[in-house]
Image (cartoon, rainbow, N blue to C red; front, side, top):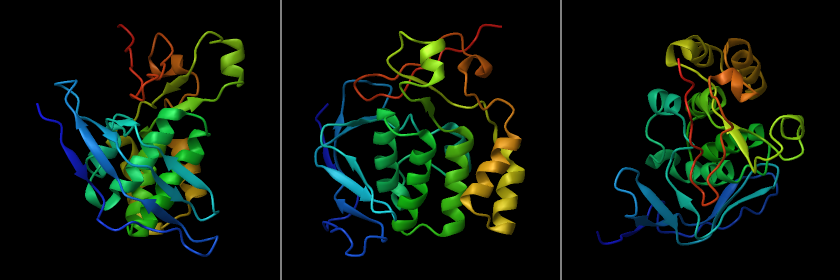
Length: 227
């Protein structure tokens, strides 16, 4: 199958905003579709791309990183849509790269998606629903040096999981967001009080072994516990 190079996010090169507290994108999302897996759609970034958040921090997605959308949970797809839909495509790319790396706290990476989607033009209410979907069902991970690594999984290079969450479980939160327009901290607290299996330890999620990230940038594999 012939590899296809595609530009996914407009033709103009976005420059950084002058003001330090203004978020924005730099570069274009340009990918090359890969044909090495007939069952999983994968694409490789062929240009550097980045997002600057409202605090002035740069989140980079470097050339060569492989994307497959598996860091985006099924809950997001149920509530919002496909991983790389046009209105939040650039946000999803930066988010997936950071989720694959697991170098920053997962909470910060989830907030990154919210700020990026707002910069991309997504209305605030919709951006908060996307944030809800990621916070409630998205990838979470332990950073090296945490108690989970030092006491339980000293041999693991990386450790991640996804909360066991259903659309029905978070539907009341969806309706609450639409009615109240809460802040992100309020959403965090509401979801924390709602989830029955949030982690952080993966054995509370129904997994029998640590979930280890693919070193080549693929999302973690999950091994369901036998009944």
